Image (cartoon, rainbow, N blue to C red):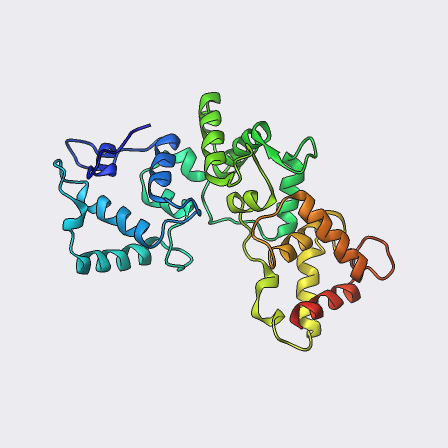
Length: 295
């Protein structure tokens, strides 16, 4: 791993000496840059971290160690506004890992892992993917399972077009890098909350304002939510549909959670709302849950 001497511009080592352009980064180099600027390890480059990134990005075109502090604050402020407008897709004033992957010249296959133009429709779809790759049903996506997931994901995002198969050493590199990025508790595997960051859902419908502070839920609201989870249209939310619903519910109260948390939350939910004790959720039972959310 490259080291940075005091007052040395970290990004300059990644620029071509002749053209001054940033060279294409490997997954390992991308991770090195991310870790360097995400100093608090919270999964975002924000505040002074973003200031440091922008100062060094702008000043790294100089071959000599011109200090990034020479960029005036007024220039930095304007640069930051333009930068966030162009790359901060969710307008939260921070740079996420996928947004940085769009900014830096990252190798194509690795960049494809962070594409957000085709997110999953719902947490039900997420649960289907989870169960497909959690082969040993451990409640975690471990390194070998993650490697297979990455291979499958890249094949899908290539659009079915013919392309050169991804080399095994690259798959291992991607797997190691993804674990470094998303395995926040450092246990060498991905739990539910970590995997949702890699495989985002289009929207958690339960976060919509209509479910906060309202005394009643309209029949139209109820139908929309029920149809979102009742994928097979059998008028019951069950199995992975129920797991998807619980996954969305738990995100209202917890940021970090694993399979054990999910199952415990599901048991509590069914104990309180599953009137006929069939371990499924009917539309009437769903209405009880939604009303409790809005209370």
